Image 1 (cartoon, helix red, strand yellow):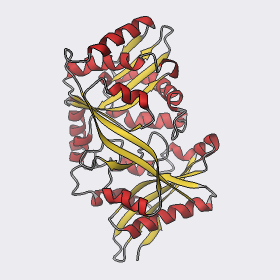
Image 2 (tube, helix red, strand yellow; image 1 turned 30 degrees about the vertical axis):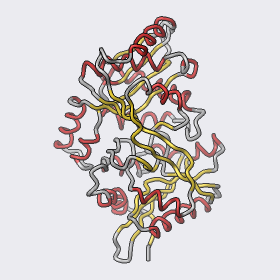
Image 3 (cartoon, one colour; image 1 turned 90 degrees about the vertical axis):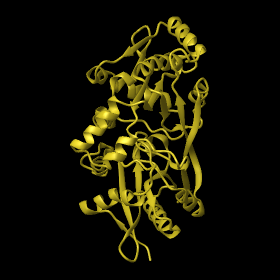
Image 4 (cartoon, rainbow, N blue to C red; image 1 turned 120 degrees about the vertical axis):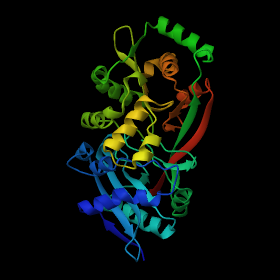
Length: 375
């Protein structure tokens, strides 16, 4: 007999956050999140997303009172009002290999949506586009990144057996960073031609302080870049401020590039970060002196990076702006001894960026998807 309870107190919040540490304890590919960050994400007084969202978090217990699963039901009212999508999100979906556990959790989500007269569920996703999204469906023998979830294969099987259908799909790539001599000549030449033709200026940063004035502009451009994609929800200023504070400590200024037009307007940016996956496995969710040491080491002594965000003004998306900014990044990578870049999830319909990766030695190594069902 599976019992589902709604998370109400601090102990249950901690239990909710810690369950994956038990579930994936022996999995060499699962990357633990930072425990305190997960707790803050659920806190209505600390996470500003709750200004336009509501959520309930559920835990599943077996007959011996062991926690055997978890899930969150989320309403993003910006999405519903602005995009007219009468949708209920679900996320933080983790469960043992027991179909009845998944069934009870999904039923609880459907019940939550029915009470609010919503039409369908979709997940796993977070509160907004800046949160983790997608159930891993391919690449189970690969480390997840800092901003993605890991799942076991049976979790997809559970959702399919419960009648959920795949909706959105993302792909992730590993890309080999060539030496300066081996870098594709056509990209280098094309980048120089485009930069000269449109009088574009690349901004290279030397400190985090220099980046801060551009952050809001980056998010504005992000909203413009992805507004036509199926899952995108406009990012509000209070969310920008929240994520700015959350991720600024992980940023290395060398790995962020901005591109300005001749009037000084931001028309493209690219944010990469050193890969923190190995470091996060070592610190296992807790940042103390030991944790900061491993994060610092990953930030400054690393041959692998992750591509987190890229934004290009639609007016420049077919004019080679991506080539200009990535060519500049290539030079930085060569100076710092970076050998590989891993993209974070890209929607499969984002064909432009995936076509660009064909200029390099790239491998599609992970897929993830959301699943949906009518309420």
